[in-house]
Image (tube, rainbow, N blue to C red):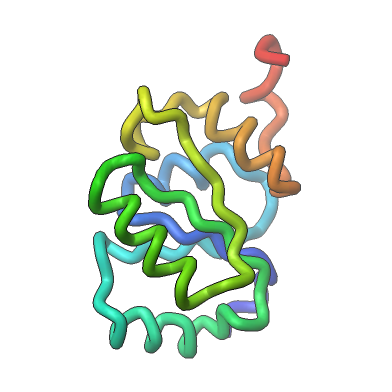
Length: 119
């Protein structure tokens, strides 16, 4: 298991890259690569020991993202949901300073340069 206590679950590699640009904290960013089946999700939970970690769900605000969020919430009941504004639709299309604000509000350390001028 990765030693990092916080896990941010996203859908794709571009989402992961974008979040990595704004966070300072060592958080494990886990890509689902789209909607998972229940068996694959159970394997992911077990492999990454998600029952014992702080889990944050950050999916797109489209039908597949909402479906994935619902499934993740059923299986990881202690997960905290983070939401992007529907106008951006996808995590990768959300401006970095907006993502930084969302993550900072969840007590995830971000690069404060992304927040300067937006407070």
